[in-house]
Length: 184
Length: 288
Image (cartoon, rainbow over all chains, first blue to last red; front, top):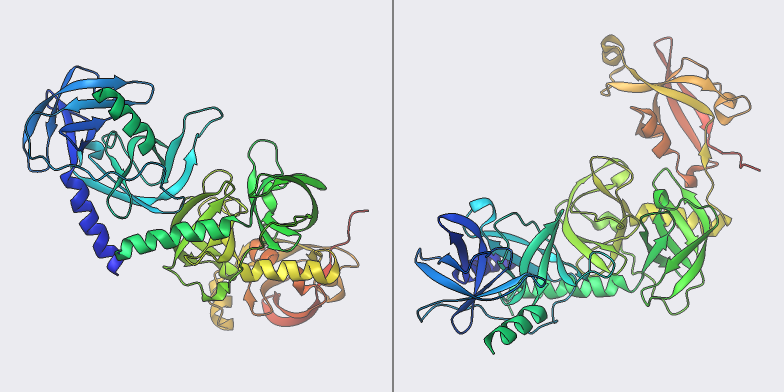
């Protein structure tokens, strides 16, 4: 029973660091409040130079796209202001097959929706394709750019798209490499 | 560490443990399937995924490709057993599947390993497990695993269009036992063709039958166990042993390999009147 109570706490923890990415009132996807005042999302979520971020407390902030990598499907946005919460990041490449994972996002406009599952596999889904964290977990449009977290609430990947019932997330190693490169 | 983290660790450990006995099976043209090192030198997989009759290439958890031979099949429960020399590959820890209850958390493993999770949703005919989880392409023939990493069944998406199913380990053990005892898996045989038939309400009431349907015999092969027992065309088979027969599938799933040679009572209706016939389950003549 304890595990179920922990899931509710985990959902709350993740909602605090998950933003809605919108533009002119239109929901584009989700994003993660990263340490040191920035937000990471998918490149396919932000196609323009600026976007509006809505925090869990309802505050809206205008953010500028600092870097985009279409191939990795990642984008970094600079957030004005301080005192924002930030996600806890997992050590890259520590996630294990079968371990519990949770995703938070805004699928089909539903704010802060939680989905849970386990890591199905780590690797490409097609021959010579890029490597994904493949999770046995349901995603829908609006989840893109949101966090995939482990049982402790640490971010292990960035949800990018669904392949049928399978969720595909950009692994943490790729995300941190991108963020470091973008900040230099 | 909280309860959720501990559950998460258990699941990952279960995948790691059970994954050591998991093979990739290349028994059909497009999509491979999964197999489990059930007993030393014997790999169990889903029968519907093995289209070849003799040699099959299988790949061990260490990436080694090995040549296996089809040692026997039981299509009634969708199990095929492959014989392979696989020294150094762990044998699955097979658990008592009778202890599995509706609502238990289970993992399905595919070669790789890949994993999905869910719960046992309900118990079907012959204690087949109905699963509330996703069997991804290639998962058929792979192990259904409990959170301790023990194998409680073999997953198959081939047996039903509507359900994700697992064959309980106890049923797989029966097949493997037969193979080890006889050197092959016999096919049980009665020698009848049947069709489903609706039981008329007055007959059901008079005979106190709670089933709506049964099967009617439309052909009896000469020299067969059915012929020897005196079964004739037009007989309606209501039950076989303790099993109610509501359609031809029930008849097929009752005729397990380990019942060959067993004497069972067939309850039939002939001209609307009940009678019991004693049948000895035969073995299907092998193709020469």
